[in-house]
Amino acid sequence: MSSQPRCPHCRHFLYLDALKCPNCEADLGYHILTRQFYGIRNGRVTIDGQNWYTCSNREWNCNWLVWEDAPAGRCFSCRLTRTRPAADDTVALEKLAKTEEAKRRLVLQLGDLGLPIVPWDVKPGGLGFDLISSLSEGKPVMIGHANGIITIDLAESLDDRREALRVRLGEPYRTMLGHLRHEVGHYYQNVLLPDDEAWARCRALFGDERASYREAIQRHYKFGAPTDWHQGFISEYATMHPWEDFAETWAHYLHITGTLQTAAAIGIHLDASVTNLRDTDVIPLESYADEPIQRLLTDWEWMSQGFNRINRSMGFGDLYPFDIVGPVRHKLGFMHDIVTRAPLTTAEQYALAFVEETERA
Image (cartoon, rainbow, N blue to C red):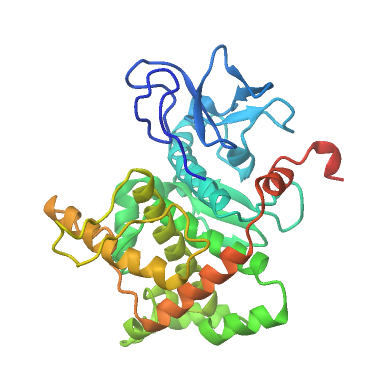
């Protein structure tokens, strides 16, 4: 489903985090079911006969709308946050606002792909987020995923801290959205592999995830990645353990599909008659659900080259500083297979996401 990021009053372009139109100054709310902005008055708007209200976290820059019969005053994305800083910790809440913005983009993409999201407060093992600041807590935050709950250190929303981590860990790319995409990959590995056959296919590509994770961590941080890691992995971190290889590859699948969807939505393509990159047109699709992985990766190969050249012309590094070698293509093909087999209808997603209080018991 393509987002419609325009003001409903003046049709000015809007970024997905907009609370107010920069052109006509109208107050706005984002409706996740239609992927459109609506003008709001006194904190509410009627859409198709139903009342929607602004999220209770709007003061912390959440622009999503909440339906009147929702089980809480928080939007669906905010409801997925199980733990957040204390109400009087305004410094941490400012960092929370930036992290929640990235999380909303993640949730929208998961919805566009038709993936199931069962909230943590509906079912044990459901998806949830503990968003904690190590700066406020005064102690390290154990980042990762466990039984559906993703823990993130809000301090990573600080550019200097995140960049220091990127350099220390030898990563060519690190963003909060990228981090969230990686961690949610751990969640979906358990959700989208329904039987022994699926797990066997997964292990044939990524390795046996039953291997000791503790030993893998110790080995990785003591010796680093193998010198030939480029021949079979998307990143150095992916070499640490099969779980991390899966999550890293999953994150890249989301990077690729999300960026191509945006390119398609705004009309970016490569015109063979004027480009010096290739001899045939490249026209990204908003969805590759009905296309083979080869089409997806071929489009991405050429589009990412174009994006990298644009970045370099501004003096930045490559937008996508990774090489997709043969074994990684096969792993991405596996991701494409399990994602395109999983899609739910909008009604099915709605039923999972907006379950009423009475249905939880």
